[in-house]
Image 1 (cartoon, one colour):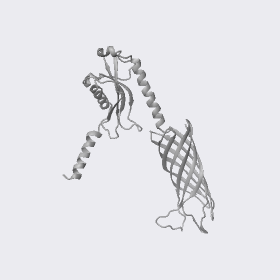
Image 2: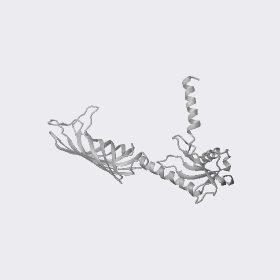
Image 3: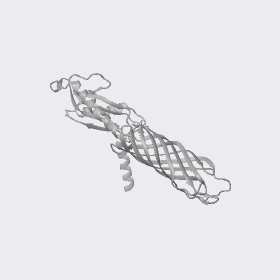
Image 4: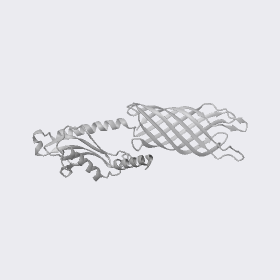
Length: 314
C-alpha cells in the first residue's frame, strides 16, 4: 500500500468511525459517582415533577457534529443515557429536544440534566424547585445568547446612492458618455435558518447618457440570502438572484436580470439599523437586427452601485 493510499485509508476509517456518531458534550459538572449501567438510568421527559431526593451531576448535550448519520431520537437518547451512567447518574431529565429541520439539520439533538436520585442522596438532596430554577436560568441565558447571535428574522431595507454604468454603450452617433446616475433599492429578506434566507429585491437606476438621453433600468426578482451577526451590533450579508430586467431609453426592452449584493449593517435599536451595501445589477436583452458582437460581448447594461440603507427589523 502506498503512503497516499495508507493516508486515504486512515482518513476514511477515522471519518467512518467518528463522523457517523453525534458529539456528546457535558458542562457545569458538580460531582461524579461510581458508574452505573444504562439500564439503571430513568429518563424524565415532558414531566411536571421530579423525584423528591436528587442531586445535580451536570448538563449533557448530544449535538450534530456536521457529519452525523446515526442520530435518530432513540440513538441520541442512548448516547445521553450512556454518558449519564458513566458519570454515576441514574436519572436523565430532557430539557430540550431539537427536531430535524432545515435550520437544525437532519439529526435529533437533545440537552438535559444528569441526576442522581434515590435514598442514597436523601441527606444531600436539593429541592426539585431549585433544579427547575437552575435549568430555567440556563435556558434563559441560552435563548438570550441565541437571539444576540442571529440576524433579525425579517428585514425591510430602503437604500439610496450613486449608480455607475460599467458596460460600454455604443450608439449610431458614437460612444455614450455615461454620467453618475441615481440608484434606489427596496429589499425584503426573511431568514429561514441562522444563516440562510430568501429575499425579494427591487432596484431602479436613472442616468443621463450622451447620444441616448435619459436611461433607466429596473430590476425585480427573488434572491438567496446568506446573513449573520458579526458582533452584538454588526450584521453582514450577501445575496444574489435572477429576475426581470427592463430598460428604457431611446428604446424599451425587457430581459433577464442578474443581481448580487453584499454589505454590512449597524444595529441602532431593536427595530432599526443602517447599512452600506454594494450592488451589481446586470440586464441582458435581445439584440436589435443587424447588430453584431464579439464573442465576449452581449446586448445589455451592467451597473455598480454603493448604497446607504435604512433597515427596519420586523
